[in-house]
Length: 285
Image (cartoon, rainbow, N blue to C red; front, side, top):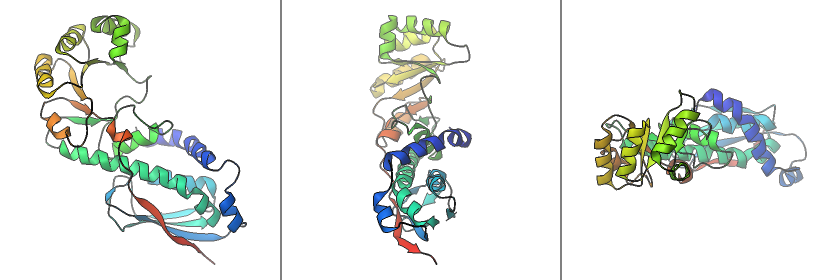
């Protein structure tokens, strides 16, 4: 995930989010502010963390108000502290009020993911193991959430089903076994695509290795079994540990010697980072 991908996808998704919140009008704002009036509000950080999504936050207001301006001394990936003044926003008061919730939803969610990701990445420092996300993302939020993982120092696994081959238990069952599934994937897929196989036992690991899998996922195995699997693979395929990976157990899993650890918790369980548009909107004459 990179800035270009974000720019290509963001606008339509942001517009959809705004339409979800404003189906015909913001009746509350329009009742108290029927005409244009310039105002200013401050974006304040309420807890320590990693900032992610500031340009998405800005774009929400850009789409609502051609006069909108934002002064910001921070960028994605920066450490922010409780009490920091992140940005000052000026523009049509109606746009500031109507766009507030959508803009904060993006920024809080993305910053929370980046913060949680960074905390696990720090636990893996000094090891060869890299942290991966998964497809366990919020519908229509994947581009934002996977971008936030990158901001936090993690790596993206495949973006979607068209992005790579991952033979999971149901694929293997449908094909008739690990070797049969890998053979079918090799015959069907372009040669530039890597083939990853999800394994749950050492026998499955051996079958995946013999079939020529590029990446072998060790799924929900206990530590001793994973250590044995890494010995069996012996560098002939890349290894990925998966299944209930959290901040509490990540460091211990890195000691096993796997190449990657994947964690759905990065995107489905990260708490938001508390940020808010503080102070009442101030009219500017």
